[in-house]
Amino acid sequence: MKIAIATINKNENAEISSLAGRTPYFLIFNEKEELLEVISNPFAIGGGGVGFAVAKMLGDKDIEIVIAGTIGENMANALKEKGIKFFQKQGTAKEVLAEVIHLQTRQP
Image (cartoon, rainbow, N blue to C red; front, side):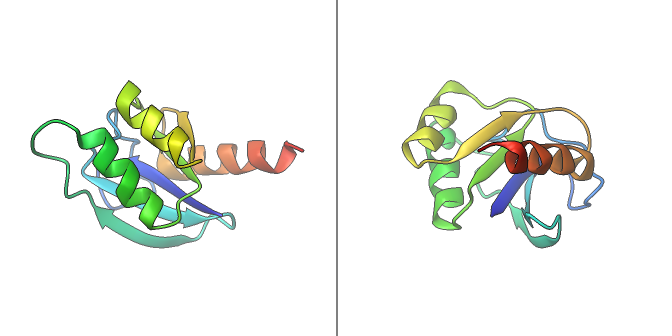
């Protein structure tokens, strides 16, 4: 399982970014809470349609779950189309990651 968390910096203890599409970074973790990759978001600054572009980028990286402070309607729809789950959470990447993994392992 690959989980992308929108963060304000590259650190595992970074605060979750309030906006998924415009986040500066995505930290990519596996289900063992290991940091696999840090992605600088190329869509953090620019024109409209960013939600679809970010969803495509994450889909191309085989992300299964996205976590951000807020996920806009367009991005939410694009993630749903790709079968990517998403959660709107606040806190640090590491603490929210553990919470979401726990939730996912409890579901049938």
